[in-house]
Image (tube, rainbow, N blue to C red):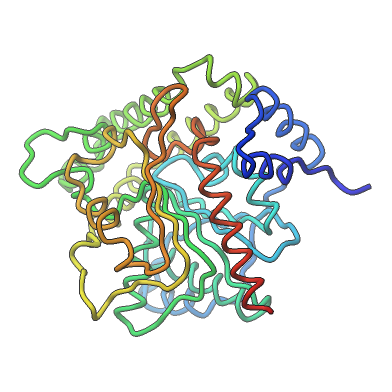
Length: 370
């Protein structure tokens, strides 16, 4: 007996503008979870060329790359998920999972806890994209959130600088954070954002590894998560009580598992990223011809500085970076304002544009095949 899937019906209702009541959405999703529970397993790469090259340059020091998990499904459009600093990818897209799996396999890039090598993560992306293209003839779609979106932008920029292009089907960037200046405005004595306060100590190497700094960072990240979970009435229509506890436990466990070294190296990777406004030139742009959807939240202030350079560049000139692109601000007229990268607590505000984007990718692929 085939497994039940309610995601197509939900997508159709969205397309018709008849979104079901939230309790019904939750019933659909939890019912589908019982028939098709999450079964993410480690991905064993069959292409390792780029990873081997990074290892050869690492002088015997093992590079810290992502732990890649996969939920396999039949479908022409696999998706790679790169989350923010926290949570891990599976929690980041928990409520989008059913929709994404409808289109193909779902790959989660979970960052290492005791270190971080952006070069090795880029190599993993290179090899996985090559694997899809060579063995399956179907380039993947990338869904990248916050810090993960910054990694993808840097990955694309480095490829262009080296005279290469990346074979990707599509790209979704949610609340991109692409440089330190996005959170810490130059010259500001005291950070104006919660995330800026959490990260500033790591920019001074003398203090980055002190236990007190790490505990303060964990407390601030926990506070950011809890602020999204404050609207209990709205959450009852999104998650069951058990699910909310499970996700909270998973997020806290991730925060506790990241070591001072792991946190420090993630921040240093962000520190080395270049703002998109810094490479606004005909020699490097566009970064990709692939269809691209850029989504910002209506209330980014807990993370992004008022004059975040990446946001300015991508909102005002996104077609220079991605000629086939759309940039939208996600709002919520019926409840709490949409916060930075709030794919969990505001999933059903983000889903309509993401669903429309995947339909556009599917139609584009059908036209190419015709």
